[in-house]
Image 1 (cartoon, one colour):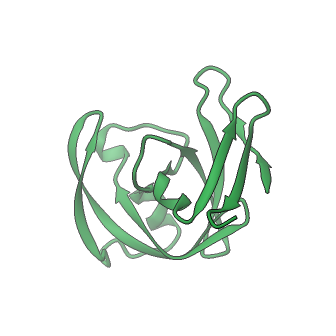
Image 2 (tube, rainbow, N blue to C red):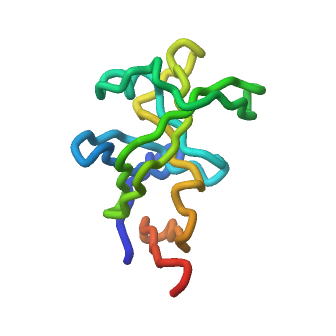
Length: 133
């Protein structure tokens, strides 16, 4: 399967749309350097998640140092028609930490577990296959 993606002309960021719980669309940056997917806590709150129901806390290393994030489990997390059930995401308050962004989070490499993918920056496509193919 091959899918077109959008990118910001100036930065070259790879932009993807994700769907949460089969009904909410959010905009994310595909960050090939991020181990885990991270969503802004404000976005998750606006989608109706109770931010007090975290399933854990983890520390992650960022360009600005070590930060603490909460873990949440998303029932259905879909990108390019691929749905991960009970997908764990890190949740971090972007605004409280001075991160001002038009995007709701970062798509990390963890989403691609069990899949192979190739990013074609010339044609702005991502080709995806099951890792067993």
